[in-house]
Image 1 (cartoon, rainbow, N blue to C red):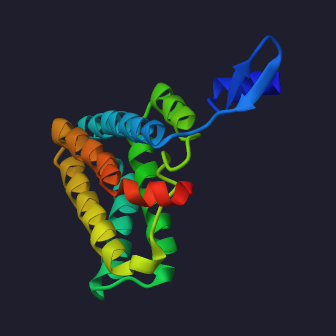
Image 2 (cartoon, rainbow, N blue to C red):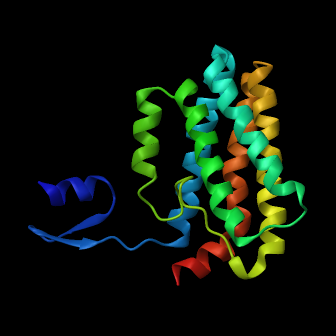
Length: 182
């Protein structure tokens, strides 16, 4: 039963009548999963904007923005900043999903997150190029600002488009993903 569950989660592939093998993951698989994440998170952002934010979620999102502003204010990144950014990024995405995500969106994202680098919790960064990472992550953080603005203004279509673009911006850095794959 455990093997069937892992197969359903996309981690194993059925071979023959009773055998399984570990699924190989290609860059194309990762790109497809990131695109799916963008659609799902975009839908959650649209729903969150249309419903409106409760005070706790608004405060959580504003806290993420303040934390990110502090990271990028100095004009460069330290290696330790990567973990701090990853933490605020996870909190940001979880806050949007908490308000706008229904169980179907959460379930679909959980299944999609099994692929390496497809999850918002899997930040790929090149520690040898912190100057480049500063630009990339600062851009992503500016997208967070725009998404929060759309959510607060209750602009569902805009929030959805911004969140989708935010996920898809990851695809511009497929060389990092390729290097991480080995």
